[in-house]
Length: 335
Image (tube, rainbow, N blue to C red):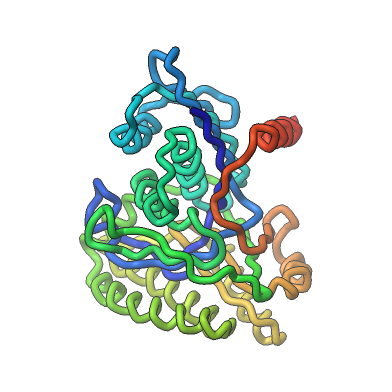
């Protein structure tokens, strides 16, 4: 009863901001993301009748297993044999880069459990399980452009594949600050939903953004995709400025990054920005323009602040040989 899986993290182009059900992770709005190739989590799950409790190792270090047990139990209720499990996870997502490692982590965990448990749920069903570990993990079950349909129940709040994004799509992350946020995404989200008079308007506007961006993706209209993504992000951050009391994730270098995006567009480079609940800025661009853009940005930001990625693939299972290779790669990186 062994399963190993790899899942990549994703960046929301149409944002998920606000829950209507905290327990089931049901969102207020549907969202759309781009899965990223450069950042991923590999996870190994083995159900073992000799274990007296679940065990969890993150990056080779033993961890408190309670959150993992809660997630395992979602699957165990469908299993004939409910053994405890040993879970080992290797996270290849840079810490503090503003990338939701929980997305790749729970998507990989769901994929590995799905194999180890021999339940073999399909991708859409599996996305409903991943969602209950982390909302954004719903989308990391698939590659390329992915929609998370908000749904009305745990069974209908699921992810669907939209497009492979294999039409010269790239993303550059500008790392502004790697420190822990003073306001967590969860508390910021709750505060915004409760107190911002702008929030209901953002929910309605976001619905229209999703319709428009899906049409643009279908016609491979890169400029329109970028413009809608940027507008949706800025509207989301405007809801925070309208909260009571107001708050913001922007930092001086976030504004500097925005100014550089405007400058790059004046140079004729099609590049658009988005920000999640944090100061780091993500740039959607043509993959063929990434080297030029990074060169332009290097006059303002250090090399370590600029991370690039192509679109990522869907969650997939790994062989034990691939796991050993991943393990050795991680150990070499640590050294």
